[in-house]
Amino acid sequence: MTMDHRTTFAGPSPVWHPFTQHALAPEPPLVLRGEGAWLTTATGERILDAISSWWVITHGHCHPRIVAAIRDQAGELDQVIFAGHTHLAAEALARRLVALAPAGLAHVFFSDSGSTAVEVALKMAVGYWRNIAEPRSRILALEHGYHGDTIGTMSAGARGIYNAAYEPLLFDVTRLPFPAQGREEATLTALEAACREAPCAALLVEPLILGAGGMLVYPAWVLAEMRSICDRHGVLLIADEVMTGFGRTGRLFACEHASVMPDILCCAKGLTGGALPLAVTLCRREIFDAHYSEDRRRTFFHSSSFTANPIACAAANANLDIWDEEPVAERIAALGALQEERLARFHDDARFASMRRLGTVAALDLAVDDPGYLAGIGLELAAFFRERGLLLRPLGNTIYVMPPYCVTAGDLDRVYAAIAAAAEHFGRG
Ligand SMILES: *Cc1c(COP(=O)(O)O)cnc(C)c1O
Image (cartoon, rainbow, N blue to C red):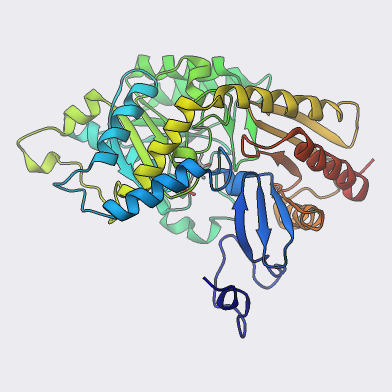
């Protein structure tokens, strides 16, 4: 392939980028290559991908094993309708996921993004109650939660400037206060009260860390308590592990920290090592069984064109091979320790607050005069880091570091040196 057609474009780009105000956004870098934790642009600049390209890349960009699996599968079977048909890559992947996931999750439904995995989970939950002739549709969710950008997942997620325009289309959910440190009981009391007040279909949570809501962490015991309250009231627990799955929090799934078995579990981002879009929604046998009937009306009516795309499934199998054969758990533990050491450097720095780390993810809040999202501090910080060859995308004044597991100590030093420089430049006090 020649470089020309990729680097010489005439006129303004027709591309409409996600979450981008084109009137204000700087020219985006044209990224040509990815390798490990690094991206290379058309001008030859190297950028350290310190947020795993929006939390998807786990082992590093273009891991040879995943690349080879994609290549091989593409030459064998590119795509096949998954209704009424099956293929080797999906069959193998589903069996492996059931074996790896928290006990009790017995069935695997494929889709293609985190949002669709959560939509599927919500439909499974509501369909379950309908099919057992006890209709329930009320969804419980955590304050500051994020579950995607489709109408259903926006409904379940926090309301704010991101979805204000679509508010008229969103359905109501019952929101529980976030279990902030010292206020955990309030969450549990609210959950108990909501379950008593009216029948609830499901509680949807991001286990242990709320990503887009600001990398907010809460303790494992709270998740375990939420599980028992749900059990007492027969409410289904949906774990949205779209971000947390595949090692981010130090375990394969965040639910493992609390020994919690959700009724439904959603995965996407890291499922293919981040190389291709693929998602799964795993569920307990009872939920599948409630749809199992000679009555066609009880069918689980959901599909998308690329459900269980073979190439994406092959990439996911290669990801699991890497987990089996490379020291991924050790790598993750080492990365957690490196993050902790570097965060600790800021402990006495009054310009930072709320230092937190869960597994490979580290976050801290920079004290600034106006931390609101619209104030644009996040974008100013991102531009500041970008000038230093770093891909970081703070959420308002919350700076977080979520690199691929192959990142080196030296790479992380660059990241934290830039964070220190940002405090000099933007920090208050
Ligand atoms: C990113 C994310 C989603 C949405 O996933 P997409 O693949 O972007 O649709 C859902 N839930 C959580 C917790 C996420 O972090």
